[in-house]
Image (tube, rainbow, N blue to C red; front, side, top):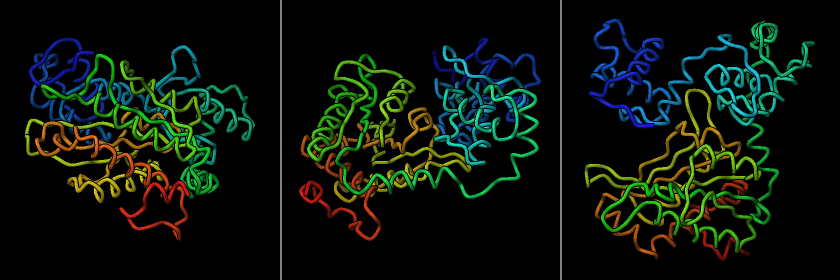
Length: 372
């Protein structure tokens, strides 16, 4: 879709304004302004983006439009049922998932997408509470959820599942399945300068990391090749289908101001829903890269991007410096720098699986130590 931004007008803008008004973020009462993306619309979009863990730029692109479309639904507005050819998506699905998860049913995280795993969890709830186990969230199921859903709360079952899964996997990387996602690709080159582009830089980094992971016995899969790309939703689906233990998405950033620089790492997190092990991995990645490269520390942040929200395993997106920064760019295009980053990423992955008693200080572990 063509992004909608300040001073745009037309049916898409009118739809955006109607949704924002329905969410209480915009007073959409002036008929003459309904189709104009004015300053108040931009401020409302920024407010919405900040609240939803999206990039706060005031522009409605693919991610923001999907979030807006999702936000218009509340649990009970419609019947929810699994449709393999066109899965139902919305905040109402996310609310259903959160309730089922809170009651202990096995869901990776509330992603707002009514797919097979949500249907199975719903059937489990229906069986346990004497309902017809048809996997359809209709009036009877909604009544049961309302009556019973808040009687069994607390304990954060998904947090416990994530911790147990990592602990049971053991400290060795041998046999782990890790998906590396080099951002963009194909005709989508990402951010670029006259000489360098994001997709090429992260592809090279991904192959360096792949080699190091393979050397220590990890089954490594890439979401794309050197000449092709794909939507983040497709990449998340791929990681789920192959049963990955972790996903690392590699990117570089850019900004109009050439002084902007540094590295930042992102995990799935919004409001009270957080991928705890994703956050832990993001912290380890961030600390190792900063310690080994001395890039400016942009810290870790919770976001709801598709690659983080739709994956069922701990997932981290790394924005490795700014190609628009002369300082960062000189390092990003240096193969030795990318080797250093690849080693830091490998060490961060290993540290995720180590017991806390055996976890070394940041920046000291080396690849031979892992291999041994």
